[in-house]
Image (cartoon, rainbow, N blue to C red; front, side):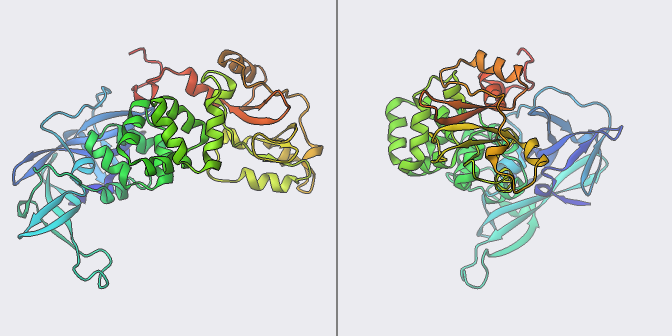
Length: 411
């Protein structure tokens, strides 16, 4: 049986009892010159954000849509050794030579010559077409591993199209986790290949050090474009970690209307309601209907916490708004007729909080009233943003929580 490795990415992994314990993220092999590499095992991602090693000898079957293993799995976090290579992370997109022609690696295939012994035997490569109008991508073919030269060479710019194709279905948090474990050079190549919106989503899920490293490897124009695509509160958090002159240079390059909410957020202390809040909650006029509010709530790019409440204010409806009037909850929107005006369904029991309110006080407020979010109103009575429970969690957790195997494991 021949299995192409990139197609394994994201495949569910099941233990002997039939319970899913994670998903395949990569394959670990040992390169041996031109000899077919032996497969050492799989990198499995488990929750929360833990990547572990599954020896190939423990894999009982690889079928469509599942990998099943026997025995027990070592829960220690996977650490790549010097003699090991990650197939998806490091081999895909390499420029290699086949028959004297320069080609690009699209995928590799493994086969099982003996029980529980897997080898990389085939390589799918792309030969660029000299006539771009004839074939959009070029000629694709599958060749023997022994016929390929160049896997052991260091390349200045490897590209990332095939790797991103393998990881296309990953959520931003999972792709961020995959990027975190790549070598610095490879991480920068993948980041450069992502479009601005996807890279912005990924940056929001990365540890602070990775964020700064990736942003620093982009040219300033591209870095400013990515910051524009980020949520203003996440962009502000990232800029706070940069030297003041670099942060100001990037803000200057951003479109003024995109930079304005970020600049406002930077005026607040990080551990206050103003420093944590999102400046882009759902805001509508009191004359808007429930039907209009539900249409806003349905936007796919909203987090559940942001979509849980709709804030009502006088014009303008962008922060800082006109006079803040109140909030209505998603559940209330479902209970009343679609033609009902928002001004008639406001919750009068929820008092807004001030931007200067401290993190402990914000936490207590949300917990006391069982809220997913709270309106933040300035001294002029204008809505300037909303603090959500995920904003609070980001600031309550240790600074390195994204890099830990388990939240709160004490390591």
